[in-house]
Image (cartoon, rainbow, N blue to C red; front, side):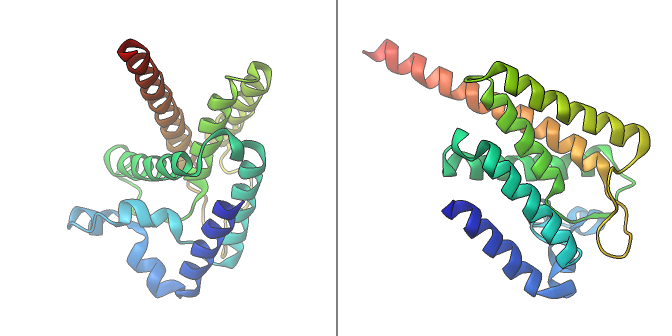
Length: 191
């Protein structure tokens, strides 16, 4: 719970910086191309306004409630960073039409996927149900567009970031599981 509170405090502190700070930290294709690589990570920490932030914090709290105990705080941090970087790289490499991006929603989809995948160890049915709901949501967004109104002034929701996030979460969680299994195997062999 401490980790969730700390995350919300950081997100709110950044929101207090206003639009100037948001513009400095957002994913901006041209700025990244010019060497401002921090934007690949920081874009996911800033929002278009308090309503956008509130939606993302609600999503974060819901995921924490569902999956918070499945990973350690350090593992969650690694997943957040991995998802953020992979989403931004995917936007840069595979979505050249996306000029800018802000918000945590892509990362939230990654955490949803990672949590649901980890849940498979203890409850296969719940895991498959969570992954199925995520897949249906992504398919509906792909077919019909955002399932909710955009933040702030009716700005569009970048649903491709949700898809990249889900893929990033699955990839990150799979790599983490493989690394953990390899570590256990090495420890057994050394005994």
